[in-house]
Image (tube, rainbow, N blue to C red):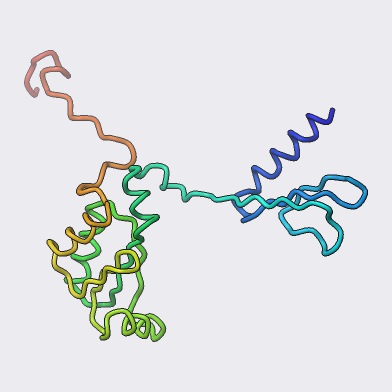
Length: 179
């Protein structure tokens, strides 16, 4: 019976783990064990254990391991605005390599101030890789070198279902031509 109750409680917290950041197990003054997503009330718990619960984004499991490690250690941010073709090429370059990146629009006053602090001027596009690499302007070879140094794979894998190759006409109709 106790095992069934524990299993139900475990399942309940597993379902809600995507919404909570921590899980608390604590024992009250009477020796009763509690499991909550909130810390216990002050001066009521004898023993408190906190477990951090980390959730992944839906597409994170589909990315190659090297990409996930690089993104964790060296997150990529693209600072841009409505700069036209240059910003579009910069965005397309990151997408073609399969780089997960955050995008910040320098048209916003807060982002513009952050960009000035990072690179000393209000110029876009700017590539930020981790906390050290800042590249002003778009130059494919420089961006590739920075991404390579951070450990991102050179080419993006195909994520999702693979398309089948078209079947030759001979295989469809037994070698007959069009009628």
